[in-house]
Length: 231
Length: 231
Image (spheres, each protein chain N blue to C red):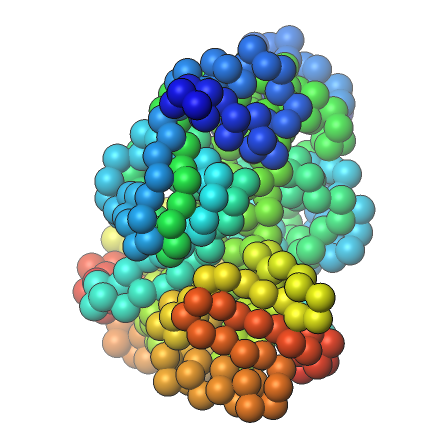
């Protein structure tokens, strides 16, 4: 397949663009740049210029911030079918956050000004983008709620359930997410130390609720996990 | 002034609508309902139907959540010129949050479907709404950062600086926010106990940095407050 055809195929299969007519999708395709990224590749740094919107077709991307002393906090994990770097659409010239792949990814990049032009001309696309942004806000608000209301063990349990809900595949008798994350990464999502993550995951493994490695997370007893979650 | 004329005046002076032509503002006005609210009036409850977008013309509105055991967390304080209840524009049928005035307010309510229709027809308005939502996201992300990176004293200092930045008026030799909040409310914003808020505010008062009552906050030495903030 030519590069253009591949891009077109990806865009056509992107949920966000499902309801657009072929002409608009082709135009988007001509204005976009698709690339494959390795694991742990930085897509944008904080303070960098915010002139591109990214569509994630495959893989996962971590959006994070660093404090002055280098402590990290993961704000969200973006999955296939989602957009990121969308703050440029909302009037921000520079990134506050960092975006980095946490597994090999296929990313489509579209110039912000071009994309805004599509949004202006395509109310349906505009609504779809608004919905994605709305989901984003709800996830971030839930994150705040977790930090305020729950202790580290509860935050890790909630993280596991949501991670499986967002990214899991059901395989006969267990849920699998592949690849899994490092304990450091889970710590940065749940605002917990790596040591605490390690201890809690090992407790859950010993109790037969999960199994895991860097390559996979298996949720073997989802009902039991759910019974442990805060109401 | 007639009710319609008053509404029109309010909408014309609403930042969001500054660039719209008079015809569109009049149409918006005809489709909206303006009301005065007392302090501590609930505008919407969690789980209630999400069919209205609110424009805050005067006063402040607190957006919060309650945990199962009744613990509160304030997600944001909305000020004049901002919209709220906008999650309906982003595909959410029911509210996750609660909105409540924390001082007397003037609020303009517009049916969600009508407002979305205006957005579809008015790219400029759409962009302006997107910018407001972008600011919202940045504030929420900063909130997460605070919870992860800073201790309760630092969170309260940051809250004071931002509260003055967002809502303060400079009066010759000090910054004033009027009315101020209760210690309970500040606790719910900063995820801190009322007792801790009380102690830290009194320390700052004793050191001559602030003065306060329920009616006002005076920031008397903003440079000194800034010097205490985390870098």
